[in-house]
Amino acid sequence: MPNNVFNALASGQTIQVLLFCLLFGLAMGKIPQPSSMSLTQALNAVYRACTVLTNWFIWGLPFATFILIADQTASTGTKPLTLMGGYLLVMGLSCLIFVAGAFAIIAIRSRRSYWTTIKTCQPLLMVAITTRSTVASLPWVINLLGERLRFNLVVVELLVPLQAALLRTGPALLYTSGALFIAQLYGHQLAVSDLVLVGIISALLALTTGGMGSLLILSQMSIVCGYLKLPFEAAFVLFVAVDAAVDTFMTLASVCTVAASTAMIAPSHRETTPPDAASDQLEAEPVG
Image (tube, rainbow, N blue to C red):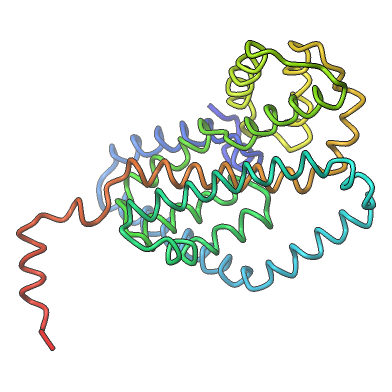
């Protein structure tokens, strides 16, 4: 249980916040319905007001993204980007594969075209790129799946925070590609057993990264390198220099994985609508 739920929410402690919300919801079920309904409506109004406020900020997100990239490039220069070009290319392609696969799953489950799904997910991508925070993107995942794509809102609101804490795709990609990059940098040949070990350790280590900052997540790569007896301290400076780009790739991969896995599990409005009700609705619609 969190000592302060607002502090846990601000620091990204998703599991603590989710546990508090579940217990708080059970407690609300024990109070009279008029009181609980008034509180629910008030919280829903606050949530929708914050969503509208964020919608206003979306118009300035492309400019903010350009400013962040320009500031990072001006402070570090282009040399670290040149040295880490191969690593950034691998991270970018890995992120692109996860994003493309996630869009395909969402398109199939929502019965929309692939291009329409990309345009629908565009605000979510902009929020993820600009904030570089999985927690800050969760309301947009809920809004995308529950209101725009018409999946069951109750199931979506339950699954999205839970899967954000369990499906840590971005850190897993960081640890895997980072360990392989350092091994190649120092000419260390990895056997098949070493590759399997890297995958298992990266998947388990990624589960512990909830609520951590990007640099703290990056520092845990030393655990993976320690098992392979690779020098991580010397390469740490290079990873810090490109942290902004890597953190963006991690956030995109994690957010899209959460959205796709939720779309696979949550029923859509077509699946929850009874056939008789759907046929009655079609008969009631005017023709012409």
